[in-house]
Length: 479
Image (cartoon, rainbow, N blue to C red):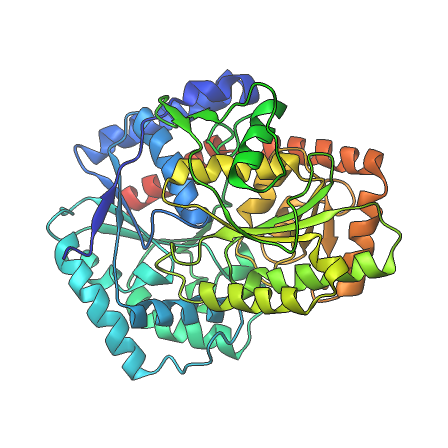
């Protein structure tokens, strides 16, 4: 069975950004793409990662590759495969680069054997596609071990790290030592924050590019109230009936019609919330670093300690059986579920654990879009975060956001201006108090949301991202 698969990226036009950003910004992106196309002289820009669904990297690639193709570049996307043991090791690396223990495994020579042998099999397939002179952008620890083989084959290789830790510790050092034998020969690397760059690569080879969202993707495009309500009732996140004229349809990225068909798997004590019930929402993977468990416990503390209006909590993530490169998902969901069962019935009646369907990526995206737009408050109480695109998405939808002051979230939210930062995400009392404060003051919530949307418009849309990528690739071609 093939390990490497090509993911289709639908062509998208940069023209749609003109009303948001102006003609000059869009012209700059078009001109850069034209120059790169001429310099590549028939070469391809390949992106390689481990999954086409589930997570911010995959979402960005769908969008950015579409706009790059629309601007005339031959940009393609490949995903790699691996064994369960391979993905267990890469998940350990993921935690290590965040400064966490994960499963505590040693990342020793036996781990190198599994990691390298899996990637060796992928590399054999990649060499059938990638030609000398092509540009290959490898994403995250899952792909780092491909670099030596691709460099030896004559490809121009960049490695893009979407994760990191603001402060080093033994686990961070362990992770970078593991990757060093694969990455030390790579001359160009991209990180999301300066603090994420390890000391051994602070030699001029590292560039900083912050992630972005696509304002026109299925996950972020404007939805009217009847569509939001129809979708959330249909998937089981709100109590019915839907509006008098329900709207389950949406426009896919290729401009063809789509319709929400599937339902979410929802665990709750009683009925779904009514349309009028304020919702506190966190949407993320079932990953310990996203701290869904802490959100549940903090929400419980708020309900017990504050005279808050009736409010429900929705913890939403992908179906735990649908994300191949995240073996921790089922265990994390199980831990949240056990804690849910231990809550008093009066709390459980207001908590909803939702596994969203992922069989259709764009159906999943429009469900998330509707849920974020309906939220009274969006939470991202991460303990560590590479960047946190769910924060960017909620800010774009003018939602008040409460988030951990970790990683790239700190670059997005101006505390008290465009959202609320939790300096210590593990302090459940502070989290509960901030959540109550925003829920009790709708005018303040609206101000935070309006400022959040403007901040994203100015700093975190995809045209800026593409221009920065183009500049880095241009420097690589000069080398």
